[in-house]
Image (cartoon, rainbow, N blue to C red; front, side, top):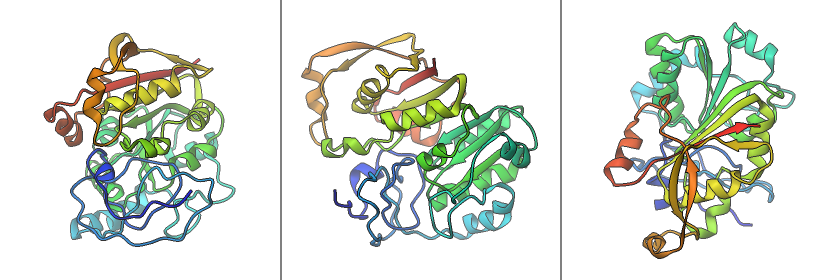
Amino acid sequence: MTDITTTATTETTTASPSGIAPTAADTTITDAAPTSDSSTTDTAHPAHPMHKVLSFVRRSGRLDARLQRAWDNYADDYLLDINAGAGSLDVRPGFTLDRDYVRRTWGNDNPLIVEIGTGQGENVVAAAASRPDENFLALEVYDPGVAHTLLLAGKQGLTNIRVAQVNAPELLKVCADGILAEVWTFFPDPWPKKKHHKRRIVQPELAGEVRRALVDGGVWRIATDIEDYALHVHEVMDGLDGWRNEGGVTVSLPTGHVGKGNADLAADMPHADFAESARFEGRVLTNFEKKGIAAGRVIHDFTYRRA
């Protein structure tokens, strides 16, 4: 498998809530891809091991003065020092996210919720502010997204949220069994080209790590505004042992996949009914979701419970 170029493409810039990436391509499955307001220039990066699959594109970009001040002012309070090195998205060797680490970092034994791909941090910070008896960990790879999350949390003086700038699957691998109450993955990069569908972050391997890290009865909440990604989620999750689809809403979806440029063919494909969830009340209506609704896209919510 060859690396995809880091030049900004339509599929990574129009359908994801995360911030602009600071460096070049990385080939580890992780959080959502950058937003369409990027105007940065991309650079090459050495190839990573062949077994890793690209699920986001990191692009070079500088923080503006406001976000740089936020980073300088709040990183020590909120940004976890768990990376393998400067600029690395890998978790440092030997690190484990276990109950002792939660007690030392958050100062309590409250339930821990992880959001994968927090984008600008609107949702996770709002959740932390409204749910002070729960702990939150925001996973984001892009510098501006991290900085904006720091800014939102710091302005409110929140004490129950932390941020980690690491690959989500790598972090989940070092989570102790049953350490997480919930995992949230809202509006991940859809990778609309059919040849790139394998790069979508919702995959059986990640589902296995999520399940192991969740407490008994814990949930993985997923949302997408892309119909084809909704079908992908059903195909990955509905048949997996150890998961129960908690959806109570019947949704009709095409039973075949479409790619970038031929999405209109889906309307004429055979359809089937699937179970999905009502909109998760704990997810605030972000600017990204508002844009999707304004464009006429249907929001698909999923709740999968660890059985």
